[in-house]
Amino acid sequence: MIRKFFSYYKPHMKLFVIDMICALIVAGCNLFYPRIAGNIINYYVPDGNLRLLLIWGGVLLLIYIVKALLNFVIQYWGHIMGVRIQADMRRDFFYRIQKLPFSYFDENKTGTIMSRIINDLNEIAELAHHGPEDLFLSVISLVGALVLVGFINIYLSLIILAIIPLMLWFAISRRHQMMSTFRTMRKETGEINAEVESAVSGIRVSRAYTASQHELAKFDDANNRFQIARAKAYKAMGIFGSGMMFFSDMLYLVAIVAGGLFFYYGEIDSGGFTSYILYVTMIISPIRTLTAIFESIQSGMTGFQRFDEIMCHPVEEEDPDAVDVDKLEGDISFRHVCFRYSGSKEELVLNDVSFDIKKSHTVALVGPSGGGKTTMCHLIPRFYELQSGNIYIDGIDIRTISRLSLRKNIGIVAQDVFLFGGTIRENIAYGNLDATDEEIIQAARKANIHDYIMSLPDGYETQVGERGVKLSGGQKQRISIARAFLKNPPILILDEATSALDNITEMQIQHSLEELSKGRTTIVVAHRLSTIKNADEILVVTKDGIAERGTHDELLEKGGFYAHLYNNQFKDFERN
Image 1 (spheres, rainbow, N blue to C red):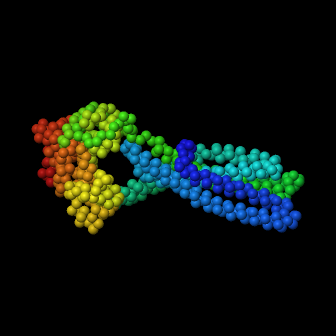
Image 2 (cartoon, rainbow, N blue to C red):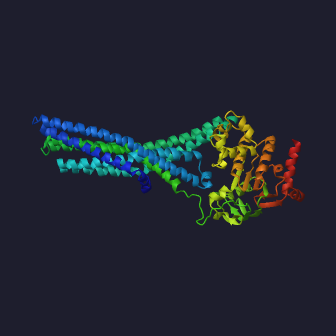
Image 3 (cartoon, rainbow, N blue to C red):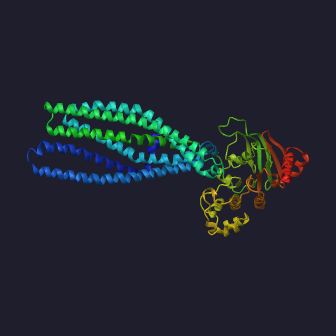
C-alpha cells in the first residue's frame, strides 16, 4: 500500500524534490544555531571579539532569511503538490466508480461513497504534503543533533540515544489500535454523510408524512455512533500523545541532569553545555512534531486504505476477445438464463428462462412484482452478469460485445427518471452528447415537450433543479423520451415508463412512446395492461418463469393468468 501511495508522487516529482531539498536546507540551518551559540559563549564574548560576534550574528540573520524563503516554498508549493496529488486521486477514484459494476452501488450508500471522495481525500492530501516533509525534517534534525552532540561528548549522545528506542517501541505498539479506531471513525463518518444525503434527498417525503421526528431519531443514532467512534479515536490519540510527551519530558530531564553533571565535573565547558541543551531541544522538537502529525498520518493512511479498497474493487469484466459492433438489428434471444443478485441468499430471480424477440417487434413483459421483469431488462445491456445461460443479440453472445458498443445500441426509459442538475438542453443532450441544437429540438418535438419548453422564460436553458425537482413527473418523463429519440437506438427498453403518471398524462405520453417504438425492437414492462394491448407478443413472467405468451387476444382467449389480471384491471376501471 505504501508503494501505491508514493506512486502518486511520480508526476509531481519535481515539486517533491524541491520540497525535500528545501526541508533539508532548513534542517541544516537549524543545526547551525546551537554550534554558533556555543562559540559565542565560549570564545567571542569572553575574548571580547566584537567583530566575530557581529559577523556570526549577521550569518545567523542571513540563515533566518534563507529559512523564511525556504519555509514559504515548503508551505506554498508543498501544499500545491498535496492538492495536485489529491486531484489525481480524486480523478482516479471518479474514473474507477464509473467502471464499477451495478452490484457495488446496490450494496454501498451514496453518502458513504461521497465521504470517501471528499473527506478521505482531504486527509490524504494533508498527509501527502506534511507526511514525507515532516518525517524528513524530523529525521534529519534528530540524526544531525545526535551526531553533533557526539562531537560535544560521545557519552551524552549515547545517554540520549538509549531513551529513543523506548519512544519508538511505544509509538509502534500503539499504532495498531490507532489504525483500528481511525478506520471505525472513517466508516461512521461515511454513515452519517449517507444519513444526511438520504434525509436531504427525501425531505419532501418526510415532510409529507410528518416523519421529521423519525428522521431526527435516525440522524441522532448515526451522530451518536460517530461521536463514540470519534471519542475512541481521540482516546487512542490521547494515550499516544500523552505517552510521547512523557517520554519527551523524561528525555529532557535526563539530558539536563546528565549535562549538568558533566559540566559540574568539568567534562564539558559552558559553551558545550549550552550547545548540548540546544541540541537536546532540537531532538525533542522533531519528536513532538512527529507526535503532532501522527493523527494526520493515521487519518491519512486510513483514508488511503479506504481509497485503495475502491481502486482494488473489481470493475465490470470485459471479455478479452470482446469486439465493438456498429448498429445492431435487434434480434434478441434468451437461452436458459439463470440469475441471482450478488450477495443474495434467496432463490434465483430467473431460472432457466428462454425466449426470442424478433427485430422491430414489441414484446411486453407483465406479471406480479418480483417475477424478474426488470431484471431481464437489466441483463440485456449487461448491468449484471448471468449465473448461467446466454443472451444473444443478432446471434452474437452479448458477453463477446464490448459494453460500450452494446449500450450504445440500447435506449432505456424507466419509471424513475433521473435528471442531472443543469439545463433542459443538457439533460436531453445526454442521449447524444455530440448532437446539434436542431437535433435536440427535433427530439423534444417528437417527445411532445418542445412547446412547453418554449413557454418557459429561459427555454432550453431552464435549470431543472436537483434531480429535476422543478419539473412535473410527466415533464421529466418527456425529457427522458426525448433523450431516447436523440440516441436513436435499435433496441428500446420501456421499464414501467408511465406507471407513475396519472391517466391523462399517461395517454399523452403513450403516443410519444408509440412513436418512439416504431422500427425498433421494444421491450415494455407494464402493470397497466391497457398500454400494451397492441404489443406483437406478451410474456407473462412469474417466479416460476414464463407462464404464458401470446398476443393480447390470444391470452384473453386462454383465460389464464393474463386474462384474470386484465379482467380485474378492467373491472377496477369500470368501478372508477
